[in-house]
Image (cartoon, rainbow, N blue to C red; front, top):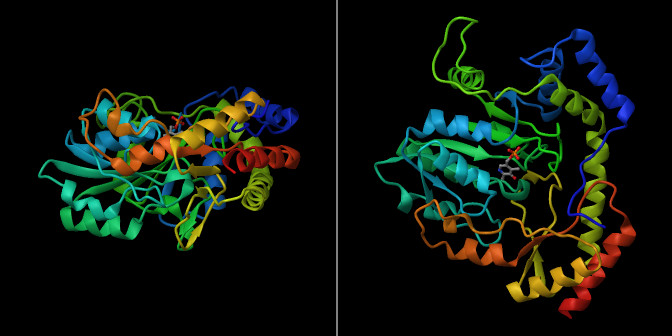
Length: 360
Ligand SMILES: *Cc1c(COP(=O)(O)O)cnc(C)c1O
């Protein structure tokens, strides 16, 4: 069986040594030594300059907290081409998603269509850096400044991505990341929020800890978004292998680049000035029919690619339906191929031959 991805598992002794620290400290959550060490290591690794990291219990709660603080119950301009968590966070926080279609090659929100969607009720733009491919952050920032909007980036796929020489997490008012088991860097379940403004960071911080200001006082409304020491233990055990993970994935992507015949399908177009993280290997077919043919051949051979993202989020049954023709077309034609740091070259050859022979 070849799955679409495999969680990186560090040697179990190294994981146990980190867990042992939590046992020795008798400290399991509430920002103990392991969480604080993980945040420091990630700050160094990502070379964060202005933005500060706050680790959380997953990649969805940071989105919800950001929407809660910045959305003000208004309309939020967002992308239909993302994981469902992006839209769900908006609706869950009683804001209204307003979908703007995507760019056909970069697959990120089409910045040229944002202004037409702005109304007096618009409070934020929530866009996703799809598969680690940055949005047009300069254009989005200019629009946000002109219309006095906040910008939140769902950067769940973006661990390690740099744009114009700095971490992609430095862009926007707030960026979020996921450390879910299927993501490039993981803590089993986990995530983080990144923010440059100290006042906003402070609000995000207390919001993720029930609103506490000391044991008996509260700044304001909060929820439980805390990451545990046991999650941080996994992160600290995975951390020394980040270069192994990135190198393996880079090699695997380069193999697909060479092995697949791109006469009948396309690959992702990465924005210039991006240091990419090899987080996914999506291929875009000419038709859904081509995708279905290839998928069925692969599945018959116990190879499980993933239709990601599918469906287009503007069609969910809890949003105001609207049309987003590019996203609807792309979601029907995009397939993420198996990708992990130690994928076997023989398997990549086999997968590529299945694709090439089916489309020929
Ligand atoms: C994975 C993912 C999320 C959710 O992160 P969790 O850690 O699973 O809560 C949100 N947005 C995108 C784009 C994702 O890929």
